[in-house]
Length: 292
Image (cartoon, rainbow, N blue to C red; front, top):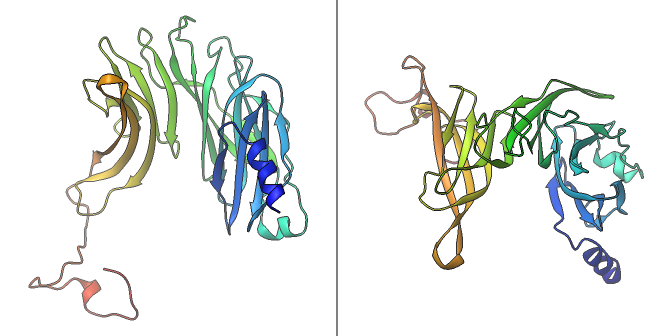
């Protein structure tokens, strides 16, 4: 067994990415010598590696939706490609020796308007899958813009894809390294005259904002979007981390919590606060324990 894990550790030497599925299933993928490999496991043992595609692959991203449909994108020869599993992956399926069946690879960026493409990122939520990547600007110049394409998932078929959208809309400024949060927010790094900043494209209101706002360079964002707690006068909070450059070639990781979309004043909010003249309805009766 030790030899088995040693072989795997030597095999996946180039930045494996691991994600969690349902009921203790894990998935991971990596690039080795230009080929994209995939594995899954339940409990401790990883499956044998499966080749998703081979030859000149430099970047990839992987996501999973409830029911454990997998989605994976990668860049090859300046084009973004996509595959999905054709049936949900369950612990019972794996225990019975089932092997995930992948769709044929599909070109996502397939357009002179959005290629050459690089740095793809995939996110999936509910019935939708979203892909973003860095492509040329609207004039076809090699000044990066962030392009997004979404498709509605229709198992057992592959998603029905909509047309690509330009999410950065800054044709004279370089935009790169896009990520997403549940398809609602697209974040990326943007080149300004004096430094790089992290920008986010927010859905409501529809606007692009600078969420890093630092005098030094901000790179490689990642974000997570969650509803704000009732005590906050905003609907959404965007948790972000990125790499921030410092003096003397040092770097640090910055965390930021950005609130947006104000709540309506009439929205009812019940606060569970003890000691008030009128008690919260949640404080009048208790049937079981809950952390407070």
